[in-house]
Length: 52
Image (cartoon, rainbow, N blue to C red):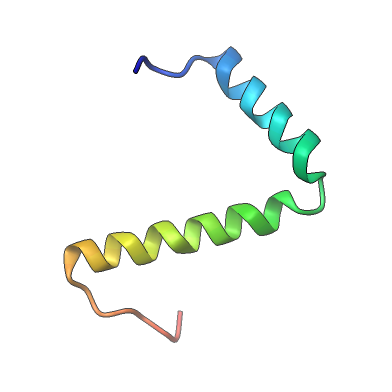
């Protein structure tokens, strides 16, 4: 799989905007970021930080 260029990223963002609308995107990105952090913590063997 090749690298993503600027046009590919713009196209992906446009499709996301059309599918979910402007109000849902921040919520989706927050959930994605939280999931990635939990995955990274589990992979590294770190305890989850509930207070942060």
